[in-house]
Length: 485
Image (cartoon, rainbow, N blue to C red; front, side, top):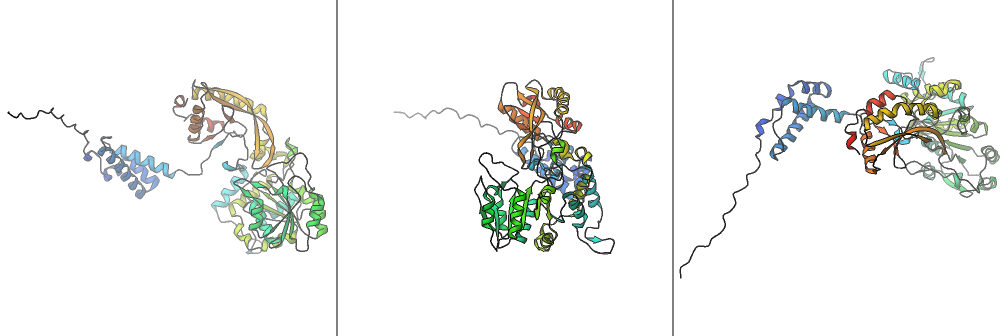
């Protein structure tokens, strides 16, 4: 029996790997650095940073060549890639945005916009040496609070005033000075929490005060305060519940009555107004909010409030009140750690001066100007913007003028809203994903546009939109809007 060799099918020919472009098709670093774009990058960002960016761009193109995913590159292309990388890295993180959320004092968007007078004052302070703590009359060391003390006292009726970097710091410093190791009496209904889970009881404890809660969440009586006062009591603390309101079966002690109780008990009354305002908002057609002058006149020994909320200035914490108590507060070593710099002091002084002319305040102070803007003016603006935005977004979206209810924000008058007008943008096919993509695209613009999604529409509330030209210039850069639907 003869043996025959086994028969196997022929093996397929090997598959050739994709051709890899030779690495020598890439220019050298020196060649790239000689082109015009690289010289521009060097001028803008420095030679060291430009050289590193060129090497990174070459490394990326080299890796693509090895993977068979790239081809030759000119020195100009590599330089353009490096310049784009450098420009992106150099862009400021704190970027201007258009606040079309409908919240005027938006904490996440920086709260108050400065008045032009405050901007100019801050710039002057940044550009030169200033007599921050120097008495020009006597040629001796001065006190930085002196630049605004007189203005603050004039506008509030207080005997004396001092400033720190925000209102939480103001409360912390006051309690640490007047009630460290001593009970601080406060109503349970006023133990507020503000943004970022920041709670009043924690501030009090960090200040070294012993929390002495009286009353209940919804009802606190005068007798509760009287019964709580002891020889060792440090202060009575009243906290204005500016970011919420309890309604129904409630009871609270008025500031004036509370001042009488504190005086009779021989303890200071500290009234934390939170947002605080120097002008009666009712004068400008808004709901009345307790003013600092009212709190002082009602008998509070110390009043604290913010600078960057309804007041419309830079972030700061104001402490006003009795001269002897302010003197004690200023001697606290913590004051130095919480003090303001020259830039904010300059902006605050300029802002406070605007309050001397209440007839023109609404026109000159952006916060008040936004809050008092007329719905009919916003309706006219919406009519102007609607066809332009429709042309940019294309047929995939509908745009309609819509009534809006704006809010003050930053915990001020939380239940009060302002009648306004905005633009409601909806996907023609009702797609929520398209709206989210559009909102994302608007956030990526040269000057991002921040609105809010409400009732299946992206709403652009026009209350805070003044610079239409800049807004349209930014929105025109919305690339591929038709692809967002």
